[in-house]
Amino acid sequence: MEFDQVPQEGNRTHAGLRKALYARDAQGRIVTAPSQGWEVEEIVTLQAVDALRQQAEEARARVVAGTASPLEYWMYAQRMDLALLAQASGLWRWRVRRHLRPAVFSRLTPALLARYADALGLTVDQLTRLP
Image (cartoon, rainbow, N blue to C red):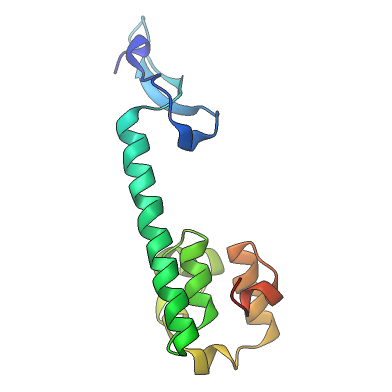
């Protein structure tokens, strides 16, 4: 992409910020160029956010029904999936998946709860309850 062709249509998901894209300048060098985003990017981002919001609400229903732990709700509410939460918390995926079960989650140590809370940007108290 040429430097002067970097999309500047605007993207409300960027909250007024710009993102860096690679582009070719007039001398043919690859440089970073600020972009305000473009419409297609905005549509795809909003669809992904809606999908995560729906997953969070489905998880909330499972937590209320007693078939899932609050960890599953917060994972989706904080826009993560199992792989990302495992990576952010430094735990194996199978272990995180196990902690999504309410009986296992209720027996987690304070240190492990703090690890999840830190990865999700919450307090331990928030992590153990639904909003």
